[in-house]
Image 1 (cartoon, rainbow, N blue to C red):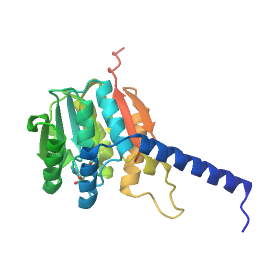
Image 2 (image 1 turned 45 degrees about the horizontal axis):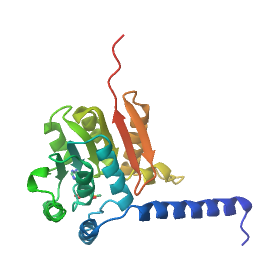
Image 3 (image 1 turned 45 degrees about the vertical axis):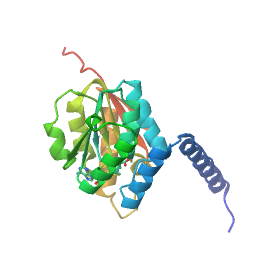
Length: 230
Ligand SMILES: C[S@@+](CC[C@H](N)C(=O)[O-])C[C@H]1O[C@@H](n2cnc3c(N)ncnc32)[C@H](O)[C@@H]1O
């Protein structure tokens, strides 16, 4: 079967894109601590963050001198190690997950990475039950890497928790943004929610949005000061 010029152009673009993304992934180097955390996560099927996604988290945390970060979706600790490596000394990562076994593996991974126990507050529970108990405006960064269907609700919580200048980041933002729906099927709840949160972030005057094609796709936004009335 012959290939049209349009199909050839798309194939070559897809090829170039795949090479570019592979290059970005390889550029982010994991040391042995991060490799073993990721391997433990893969064995436990907790879907650890990609190296490039983790490097972006570290960069973002360092760029704002983060001292207090909330994570939803501890997994086996990969993203937490990247975050802690970007955060200031003496700072605290609060990380929430529903799986006690994952959090035990994460605790061991943080220890192996050299972070004392008082740098991490692990909370067992559902993100949407735990976040409302945390203090308003007390956090520099909120990272969400848990059930996609709740992303819009996590955005509302993050906006309450973040200080002005703080950053919210959602993982897995790419697939939903780029997938096409079948003619007869509506997107599943997770895909619809990721699209919805991307729209909410872009349309909010108090947020500076950024969609990054890194790793699983990161949707990030900086919280700005609310505009003065009048
Ligand atoms: C993609 S994994 C997180 C991977 C982790 N960030 C890492 O890099 O290793 C998603 C995690 O979200 C957790 N999770 C699922 N639903 C949750 C909920 N409602 N509240 C908190 N955590 C949840 C799962 O147990 C799982 O560990």
